[in-house]
Image (cartoon, rainbow, N blue to C red; front, side, top):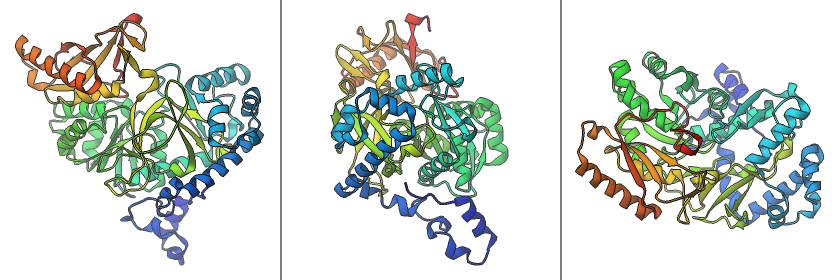
Length: 487
């Protein structure tokens, strides 16, 4: 595991002007114009993709499997049950074929077992005393109960480092004021991002989405932040609400950088353009500690050298070759997993990625990926696989005639959908007045044709008036499940 710098101590030494500070601190820390947060590590990312780099990573992974087996009773039991002795894993194919996946259902089962056996829901795979923990975060639980992730002091340092690498690439610098509009209530984009911003020397304004739109806009008016972080749908909502709440357009607040994430939108060209035009800011899309770039050619993996990466067929779970343009379910294993508070081998969080291994037009290092969708959000319409992210891309492409907000109506449990796929789509501001049946019929035909060309489906569209769908301060829920009584 690479040694992470004690940035706080080094920064304090630099600012104090102590004798010898310049020679003690690494050069990359004191240069705000450097292209990467950690020049040493990020310039070496491409080495991970070479044959020699993969050999070294595989050797580290084999040691990590043995270490996890030795330190984690949970994993010792799982591997024993699968008939796996660490030394029997001799090839990547052995690893993919014989070591069981740790998916969301496995994670939740570990939590349920832990709640019954240990009195807490942090999982049977937790290997340290509770007293050593420093932070607990959770997923939103939008598709079930939340899953928890715990950090000790070393884990927080590692999280700070990888998030700092991503944030630095957007232009966030020490001394900048960052208005934090992601949800703070235990979400991974909440306190961990604030910790990373503080770690890299930025000043956070932790309002959080829970505080509401009026309070967030008030703080923006009074404190003049340089950067805003929030979901793309919340950013769109701020465009609508800012004039009514403050009497000013959102562009008058002076944000230089807008970092969005948590849901599809920030990488869709039409959404990026809409946000850029309204905010007058540079737009970046964040997915965990990975960030889009100015070329918008996917999320750059600025810390990929620390993990073993696999790509699987989402249905058969067979190993796929990682190559430029390949698509599959992403599976990761930390190359120093045994040092974590809750070691995990072969974590599959359910995201379907398309990976890009060729150099990016922006010139920055690291493989890139796009999120095709979530495996458990996949719909099958007459045998065609459809993901909400793809539907969102089509709908957003009709802005401003469409607001970009929509719902997928499911009358039966997915993934199978009896055609046609039902969509409720909100009209945009140009149609605030009654547009007439002929106009709406023509618009529906355009949308249907675009979806048929892009996704091979023809939806049934129900038009909604502008502003009629709820605007979420968190992740927008795109499914309306009538079979559960939702509407």
